[in-house]
Every structure is written in structure tokens, then in C-alpha cells.
Image (cartoon, rainbow, N blue to C red; front, side, top):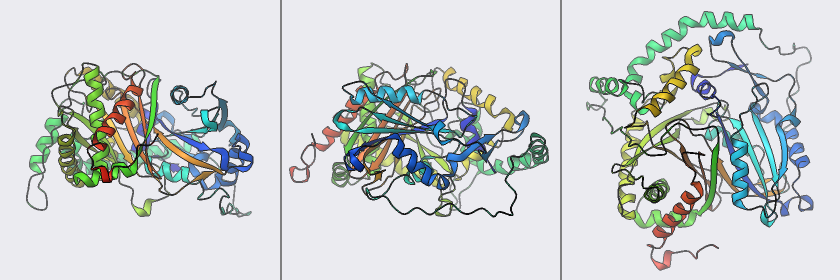
Length: 495
């Protein structure tokens, strides 16, 4: 039995029929390297059956505390049924990327069943070119970006032949069978823990208040910015300087409204070698180039929508704070950075330079921010009120006509550089499918994969209906920066 942290529980609390707390990954596979050149649901089922003992979150079921007096627990599902979580479907011809993206958007828009472990896998046949897709959905309460990658890596192998998998540990026959705690036991434990919750909240005040305006879930609350600024003036860094007060206002755009329950999704792959060539040419980082490409694409799209503000957009960037010792522990170990995106700058090279300066400043603020800030911010909200508080914050995020908490989420996640296989089928691409919330109706997540950068763009169906046009804008921005390279460093364009 394992209790969810306040940050884990927040991803459950935000769900209300319009918000979904799960994340997904769309994996494109080439079955020509699999046995008989076929990737079937039976093959995926066998693979999961052999490795499910290594994939703890796939067996976890929620066990809530009565009256919500404490955060729920994960328990091993005593009636776990692998077949419940596996589905198969096929696209109608011709099986284009647009058809696939629409199907993914529909599947991603469906909530997970809390009566079972919170994950699903869909094998999608019928893609053009003989490809097969696999959509993996799992609740954000169980994993973050890094631990989710670790989880999926347990299904992947470095060669089509697979690898040796350690067998399950043999249970001691004399040990009693694990039994889920009763409601009375959970209630008693929650009552005993109430004073501890209050003590933790008080202890978190000194290092949490100066940073509350950098937490998206608390920024919309009236008075938080003033309280954080006051706390910063009173807080001194080790070098004797006052903590920097960042610019925290985001302009209002059509992306920053109340979301619906439905999503739109689009995806593309960029050449990592070309991104590195752009990085070397301008003396910046790969992440700077990724951020500049997203900024340029957003500028193009907002101009097309006649919605480009005079001020820079604000992006929230998730950052892993998972230590090497926490590898394989799952759950959420993340913080965030808030970075201005110079969408008001028309020159792409100047935008790249401004992004580099912005990310350097954001990293300095991030290093001065406690790694546990997202979790500590939730300590001020009793578990029984967390769901209601999350909904109130969502209402505040869309009620202010001048300033949403941020405009967009942009994430850059490292992946594998080596070829990978699933049941013998070669992994071609892996596109992240993330989360949108009230006030922030668009999310761009980039995952490095081999020689490519796989980009997944998800938006609310009403606030961001033009995600494919945004992907085209991203590619146009990429070509513009690529064409500025010296001919000797420019790679032939991939068809």
C-alpha cells in the first residue's frame, strides 16, 4: 500500500468531466521486423503478461479514504484483469496521420475507470504504409514524464529478439496474503494524521510563500502575487541579494478560456541533427531552439487568428526534480519554470537570442525555488477540499479578462537515442499526448527519439481547433531557421 502525495492527488482532484488527469503516448511501430511481419494484440498481451510484475503502476488501484479526509492510497488490485486494459481497433482507409490524430483525440478525451488500475493500451491497425500505432493512456497521479518514460521502457527492447526479463519474486508461502485496509482503518489513520498535516503546512510557509506566484495552480488566487512579492523582499539569498521578482503577467488570448471535454491532436517529427546544427550555429542550446520553434509557430498562428498580443506570451515548462536515487519510484517529482516567449519579436534570430536569455534567467529562479514547491503549495489545502479548491482555481483562471496564469505549456523531454523494439516491431516515433486545463488550452510536448524530435500538440477542441495548422507553422519556422545555416552544414531535406 502506497499513499499518493498531495501533488499526485491534485491530478485526481482536477477531473470534473471536462478535465482529464491522464497522459498518453502515441507510439508508431514498423511491424516488418516482428515475427511474420505482424504486430498483433496477442503479442502485446504476451509481452505485458511476462513483464507486468516489473510495472507496478499497471497493477495499482485507487483506494480512497472515507470522506476524503486524507489522500487516497494505491493498492495492488486483487482482481486485476489484463484483458480489461487492452483494446484493438483499425482506421478506415487510407489510414492517414490526420485520421490517426482524430482517433487519438477521441480516445484521449475519455476518462479512465477508477474502479480499475488507471491505464489503457490501444493497438491501432490500418495506418498507411503498413505501420501500426499503440496509444498508451495512464493517469498522471501515478507517473510524471520521467517515470512514465521509465515505465514504457520496460516494454521496449534494444533488439527485435527481445531481452531476458527477471522472473517475479517468489512469495513466501508462510506470509499472510496482503489485504486491503478497511474503511475504518483508513479513517482512523486519517484522523491521527490531521495534526501532522497542519504541522507540515506551517513548516512549509517560509520557503513556499516567496514562490507561490510561480505555481500555476495558485497564481490566479487574488492577492497571491502581492503576498509572494512581499515574502521575496523579506527573503535573503545566501549571497546577500534579494530574490529576483520575475515578470509574471500573461496577456489574454483566445487560447486562454474555459476548456471543453473534447480535444484535438496533431503531431510531427523534426530532424534532431538539424536542430543541433541550428544550436551550434547560434551558440545556444537544443532546448533554446525547441522553445524558439514553438514561439515562432505560436506567433504565426496567432497572427493568422488576428489574436497576437503586444506582450510576450508566458509558457509553463515542467521540470523533473527526480534524483537518481528516486529512479523507479514512480509518482510525480516535478517542478515548473515560467518563461516569457517573445512572440512579439518578428525576427527569428532575435527571438532565439531572447529565448536564450529568458531561459537562463528562468533557470536561475528555478534553482532558487524549492524542488518540492508544487507539493508544498498543496499542503495549505486540506485533502477533503482539494477537488473543490482545484475547481475554484480553474474558475479564477478564466474569470480574469486581463491575465490568465500562463498562456501555454511547452515541454521538452529527453528520450532514447538507441533503436527500440516492441514485440519485435521497430519503434519509429513516439508522440506525447499531454494535458490542458482551464485557462491554458494548448500544450506542446517534444520528445527526443533516435535522430528525431517527436512533437505532440494537444489542444482543447474549441479553444485550439487549428492544431494541424500550428504543426505546419512549426515546420515552417524550422525551415526558416534551417535555411539560415551555411550550405556546408545544411543537411538534405527529408522527404
